[in-house]
Length: 214
View 1 (tube, rainbow, N blue to C red):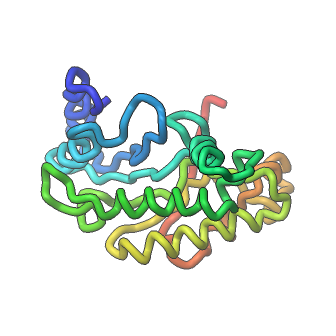
View 2 (cartoon, rainbow, N blue to C red; view 1 turned 30 degrees about the vertical axis):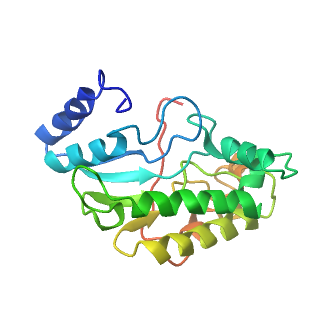
């Protein structure tokens, strides 16, 4: 909504409400991959961070989406195809070198951006509590789960080589793979392992996504 001056005031309203009740953490996106809503249309995300600071809100910022909304991994794969890569699956996001470099470049550009309003680089901004590698990552093309483990490991190292000031989490929903398949056999389909994935060096805390109405 910060891409448009007519709706930008909603950001202040959103942050004011939880601030009244002493709530001080909010999660939002640091991506808009393709499409017509730009990530940083002046003042964009700079504005969001500046308003969060004003109202005492600390941000968890996701860096890409597993799902198609706002581009996601599908858009990254499409960009690679446009550059001549012979890719046939959205899951190539996790193992194609060019796609991974696209993502790494996005991470670097975002982390090193200097906020035009606060004059503070994102990687140095205490308003940002944490970064999130991906919203709800899944890789059902690899039955072993190793692709996801390798991707998280590689991207965590890349992140920490640029930003050592902030916490980092993955963005998992909480599927346990083979560890606890007796509790939810369907979780095997998603090829993530909440325990193993979160034990990767550089992952600082865990999060889960709850959908009580489903």
